[in-house]
Length: 151
Image (cartoon, rainbow, N blue to C red; front, side, top):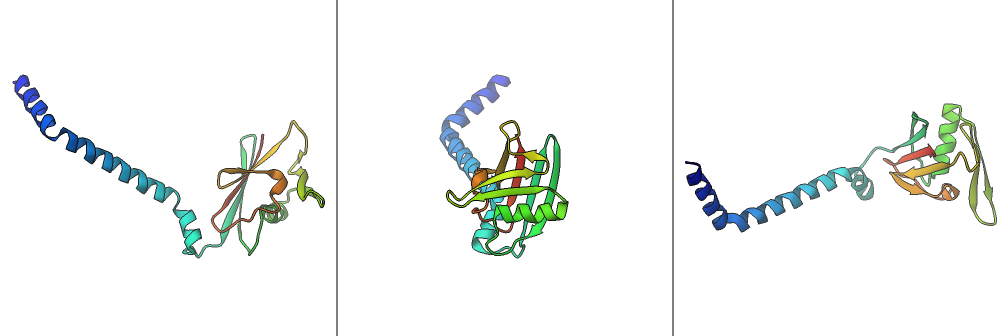
C-alpha cells in the first residue's frame, strides 16, 4: 500500500515539481516583501507625510538600566536638542562643548558618564550608529528613536 502512495507522489512530483518550486519561491518572496514593508512602515509614513504624530523617543541604556523619554519634535530639531530637552525633563547632568574650528561636539558629562576611554557613549538613530561628535548637526523627525548606550 505504501509503495502505491510513494509511486503516486513521485509521479505527481515529476509532473508538477517545477510548478511547486516556482509557486513556493513566489510565495516566499511576496511574504518577505510584506514583512519588509510592515517593518519600515513608520519610515514610509514620515517620508510620505502621512503621519500626524510629531513624537520622537530618546532611550538611555546603562548597565541593564533603561530610561525612555518621549517628546514632541519641533522643526529642525537635532539629536543634541533632544538630549538637552530630556536632560531638563529628567534631571540629568549634561554638559558639552562644541569646537568652533572643527565643528565637533565633545560631551563632558552625561548622566554621570565622563568623557574617558573607559566610559564611551554610543549614539544610535533608528538603530543606526551615528558619530557622537556630530549629534548637534543630525536632524531628527517624528517617529525617530534616539538611543544612547554606555559601552
